[in-house]
Image (cartoon, rainbow, N blue to C red; front, side, top):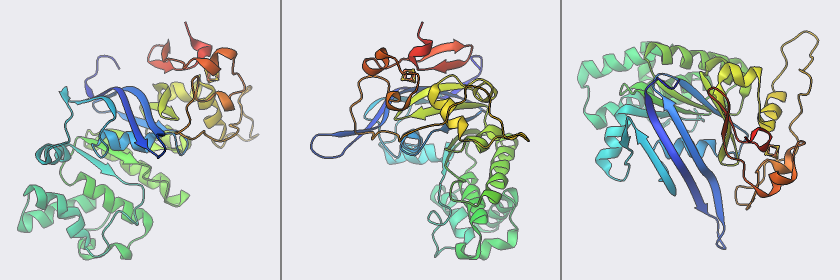
Length: 321
Ligand code: SF4
């Protein structure tokens, strides 16, 4: 991966929220991450791990408390309106809830065409033709342009959300749990659509999910987040074949086993307990309270990421040099 072009580079990113009485909720707590042009990087972890906050910070929805984001080699600025507008042509977001993210009073054409109108990109017949092309691209019919969101199923609404995200021809997409509100039978269809669009349009894709099962089929690399930090990052095949961090191993234990005898690999442990509050002040490893392999050092020192194998980093004292 090192020879590939870095599209997005994050260094020392923190995003804290004040929660009263001088306490801070550390949603993102010191992240370094490069996203390469043309890859699908999946960000996984339980609810409360900070993955959606990281996605929104990348998109400029939340200004960072600390740290930097560079996009295509340039510092990422979201303060000025013209910067946000310019960035929205290059990067778009697909949202979790296909029911809440579409305005029920607008037709599909108005929803998909809104970005084009803001940017003054297409008008009249050309605008309508572009909308119809986008509908067909996401597997819907062009005559659906005149309908309203309530006339569609959840899966179809998510397809409309995807068409809207693609309307300005972006190069980078952040999908924030795009399948978690959908029936299991529809989830695979949406994942397959996102996968084929990523290839067809040469998109760079940050896919945020808690379901490691679906992530497997869409990702080039997987980053595992726990309580605001990335604890493991590797090529997708390596994460599934040889997960190193005890948290990743626990997450994988929740994935259904696809073998006739329902036998898990030896040593695979189930994830126990709950993720601590991001407002708690933990001096050592944030996973310590749930880890069956914790050592005394884990309670006092925060583990730093080390490269355990080429392209495979893990933040755990078991792998410290
Ligand atoms: Fe477990 Fe210690 Fe590794 Fe944390 S650093 S995951 S507590 S072994």
